[in-house]
Amino acid sequence: SWVERHVAALWPKIGQSQLLRAHIAALCAALGRTADARDCYGPLLEPSVLEDSADDDWLLTLIWTAEAVVACGDRAAASLLYARLKPYAALNVTHVEWLVYFGACARWLGALAGLLAEHTAAAAHFEEALALNASLGARPALALTCLDYAKSCWGLPGRREQADARGRGAWRRRGRTR
Image (cartoon, rainbow, N blue to C red):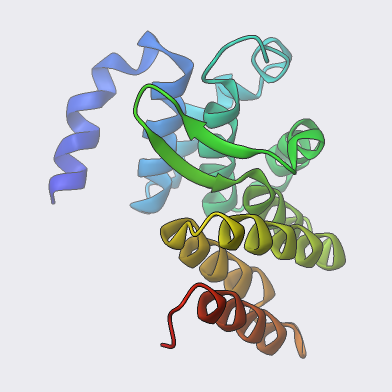
């Protein structure tokens, strides 16, 4: 696939930046290549990286790392990232040079909390992310938040329906009815 070729082309450049390493980890995890994803994000869990908030790409690096960690089901890594990202729950993740909005940081906190079986905290984070993304009219981020919320609640009595209802409500408030 195109994504596999993209990952193969990026792999030799993995040491060039922490952001690139996190991006490759997230892609590998999305492709089901969990061993490769873990190899990629492992160095990003070092305290020197987790604490390097002076780097302009730091928050984006951490959310892409969180994406990979959740996909890999790595609870130990989720615990580290959750603690580090929690103070930034109210922030929106962007890349100014790329003019890209990724969504509310609370979305990734919700996914991490869900992996850690902190279901009440996960729901609160997802609700915050839904509100932030909806207030900005950020439909792609809103859709991804709805999807992650539903995945996090899957199998929990009553929670899946709650997530589905909240996600549909947030989507409708943005002018969509489907």
